[in-house]
Image 1 (cartoon, one colour):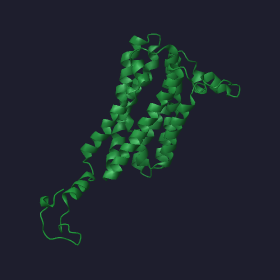
Image 2 (tube, one colour):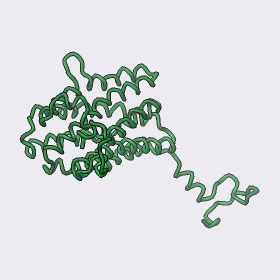
Image 3 (spheres, helix red, strand yellow):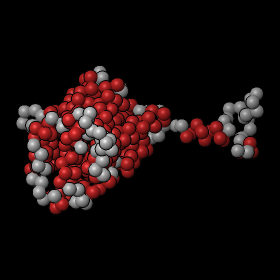
Image 4 (cartoon, rainbow, N blue to C red):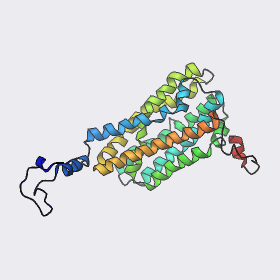
Length: 281
């Protein structure tokens, strides 16, 4: 940039105007200034364009293009994610010294594990399994869960255990996009999959309001905690990590149930394969 653009008020030993940075330096500094609270939130919400609602597996689901086995495979594998969510939330609480936050965050555990008057989201998911034709026990014993699904979900739980509670709270912000995906199932499944018993859809109805409520606290924690530009960019990376997790779950299911290429499918000798993985395939 031309020095003519600088107002010269004397020079330092390096020849730069004393008391004023060069235009390029000022621009660089401005680029690193924290985003406003509004812009930061907008950038977080923009990550919704990468939400797994856009994955080909989900697009096929909402278009009525999945067969019974593909629906059942999705329900059985997502159960592993469902039962790990309260464990993840317990990890967040164990790292959080703020009593007021814990008092609110514990509701997430109750939402899934259940409490008096509400059997919880895990039970609702088991009912969904029965509605799509799976036996309750075969969902509970995780016999259908693919290795790729396990790895992805376990990575999420381990992140929550090792990260700060604010970072773990930030990772939950995919809930900003969840109401749309739940509503999509409620809108499309009765028409496309009439063989699924309607009472099995209660989980999706339940999560419509719960997800919106949970977003309020998670978003406030994130906007309050990540203050510098570097921290804000890290928050976006955390949210991207969670998006990666959700996308990876569907990648694993696509390989097994759409492309008919489950784990170790190309191995000519499967005699050493554990029985559980034989059933998965």
